[in-house]
Image 1 (cartoon, rainbow, N blue to C red):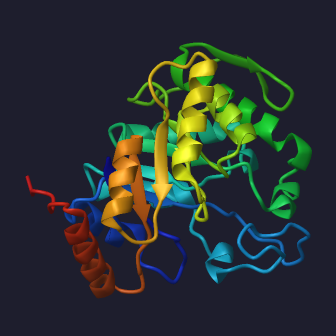
Image 2 (tube, rainbow, N blue to C red; image 1 turned 135 degrees about the horizontal axis):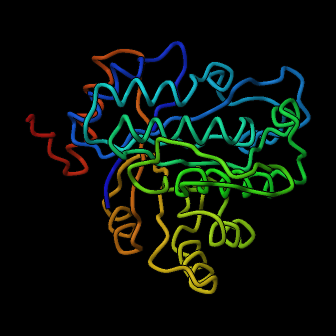
Length: 286
């Protein structure tokens, strides 16, 4: 089990080329960032935390583009994984996004993980022409089409939302195919989708029964004929030794923590304190 940092990026926080090296130097294994291209000012969709159209944080309307952010981080780091929690692929063109992600994986020497969501903000999705009741199918097709472009010398895909004939597309990701995780509630419906179409699960902030959810995911994963184990990324608030021991016993892959990002001093101090509590040694300079 390793530990990572998730930054709720905004134009008010530390820039990725400043923060990412601090995360790597402190000994953490990964750097996760979110995606929201825009937030419609009038919305019918309820936020999962507030239960209505209000937002719990104004950074939702100020998030940085995740791919530019991770490219900036890639240029100034060499070890940490570069990931999203979560991105919204259906708001982009799948062929263009496949190229962007393959390029990011290429320039980072294979360090990209794609965390995706189905999208709680239906009004935001609608502005991109995404039908709310078909967004899961649309996401599945996007991922399948991108994997075809990443892995086949001559790729093609024919679906309801993505359709292209035999094509060339390089670079190919050094990893072969970029790992894909789904950030969603721990429900049987979501886990069946993951077992069919993804490589693992990112918990939601208020997930109550991690142990029960992991057991259900593993059962559905096995029932789907998937080899190995799903990756499991847990969003945690603060390190509690007993809870961390439980996560280890469950086979959790990564535990993520947020951080203050309004100054280098605060971020550096927080990372050092958190690393100490987690028993993480600072990275050794080469």
